[in-house]
Image (cartoon, rainbow, N blue to C red; front, side):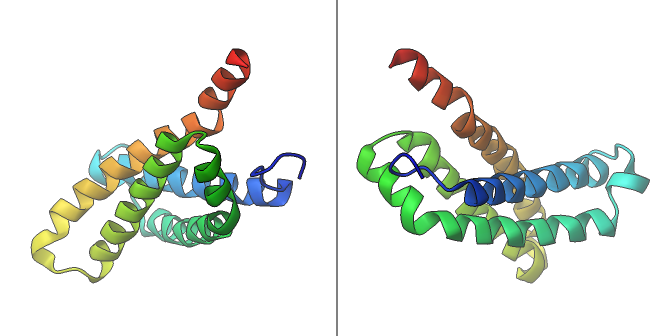
Length: 141
């Protein structure tokens, strides 16, 4: 690790792969199940199961980042809005994901809509956090 707060390569790869796998499988299921696009392929239980497993890996990845990367990022005041936005969205995704499985039937439709909207917002912020924001900062420096 050459810079303070920079993740080791294995951890960065784990975080990116975990978050992207979760986002991609979630998007696949959203397109198939909610929007009826290629439902027989994308809206299947297998895709939903893959999304659940990817979500577990993404949660582990987040846990691996929390003790160091987030603490250093907070202290350095760099990318605070995107970092803490991601944490907020991930918290909402964990809660709504749990509500989809364990919650009462009366709130299921609200939980579904909230979950996929937050998921799309998270994916955008995650990609910005990885790419655009970092490139802008190096151009300014």
